[in-house]
Image 1 (cartoon, protein in one colour):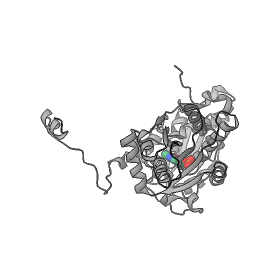
Image 2: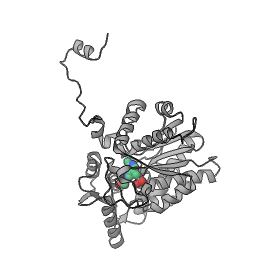
Image 3: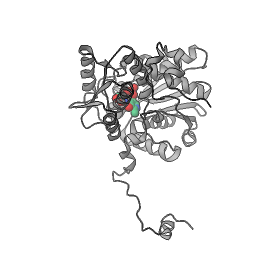
Image 4: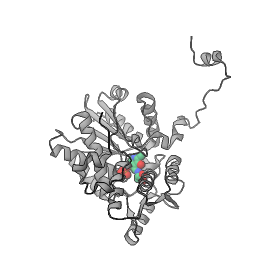
Length: 355
Ligand code: F0G
């Protein structure tokens, strides 16, 4: 059996590892690409799910964080800083803990999921809630990194994008070629940029015969790239992508152009419906922001944009356990109440309609 060693060691030749002694890894990457027959049936396409919730801290951020923290340590940094809607803070805190340095994380007050907040605290992150949104947090993090000895590990740091593009390498290896379409959630558009770059590299190397059309999805209340303008007060239940002024805006436009891509918006109900379908019919539980890839595919298939038999990969970026509350919410807004019965076999059999 091949034992996975984390993306920096697995792709050492591609990521330019200079000093093996400073590699900070928790074994990230090597995530499953799962066939989704239920989605194939619904759309007529051949649909696969890249489950990034399987990374050590439960999101794709770990792929970039291993590179960013390794470089920070290589440069002698004693502290890193990031702004975050939750997942970056969890990942930065975990990798900093492993490296034995400090992570300062700035998050919008009351707007990050409990699982992610718990992770940042558990990993000894210096967590600070800002009375503002993510875009305010990022502005402050950038200014602090400019003026103090703290190393910025948001995706504006090119090391993050470098690490994250390894997911596209893996998809090409897992499928034997690039897919025809790739659907992915978009917040800062760092990951959209990273996959586009990874796929284009594989095509240039001759490992893939094509580059997929990159379809990026934003929440309807938080869709600056779809609208073509900054959203001042972004709103969505998909807190991970509640971002009004994406940091990688220009890179994302370039990537869309180069891949014949597209940006679209999905409303919160559509996101929650897609989360239910993926968990209930494919067996993959993801946080709302990740489910937007599924919603995007369903909407594009319905619009006739995805030909029958087309190979489609959906990146689902974060684990459902990070923000589990939405799974218990019914379409009418009420909460799921699991059935309670006495401790008697016959009662359970009867409730389960077992004959
Ligand atoms: N999905 C999840 C689960 C995320 O946490 C994020 C971003 C995205 C998608 C969007 O990725 O920003 O590269 O376009 N989360 C960041 C954070 C902003 O702070 O955790 P992007």
